[in-house]
Image 1 (cartoon, rainbow, N blue to C red):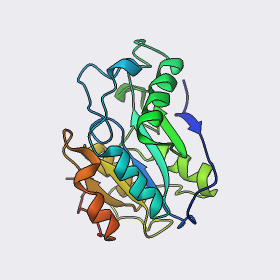
Image 2 (image 1 turned 135 degrees about the vertical axis):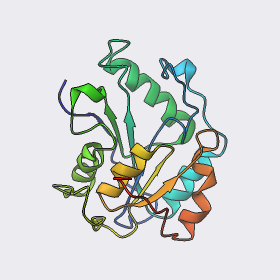
Image 3 (image 1 turned 45 degrees about the vertical axis):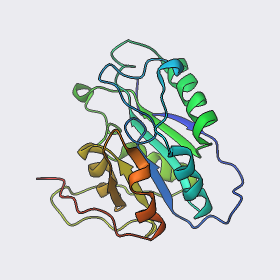
Image 4 (image 1 turned 90 degrees about the horizontal axis):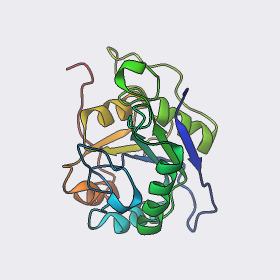
Length: 199
């Protein structure tokens, strides 16, 4: 399987788009994760406050892209229909997302979409605003974002690395608290967390 799985739901926004994208990891940010994967919609448990946080991002004018590593697909545990059914439930409980990107690969597959590589973020950016970053120099300075308000919320360093690679503001959260712990900082246009991808 080449490239990420893309689910696209671009719709008219209730408020004017500010031009920025909020890239959001899924497990540990919107819903509780599991060391054994989220294998069905029934296993999806939403972290309290996630819906309100997504509503706040919408009210600020963000387009929202979910970017999630799900190697269970390439490990043969389940397929594309399962991820889509999980995401259907996620959207019913939290709200609609403009793009949901899923990397199905394992580390050993050496794809360009598994975080910390920025392939999913670039793919989503291309879908939403027809432009994206083309290359990343991990040893160089942090790239300039396409929009200064672009942001990445995640619970792992791999999320921060992917966000760093597209110049996004970075907000790292604890996996059992999720996005609710940083939404006020985002509302206040916080510059985000410091991160060095090579340390």
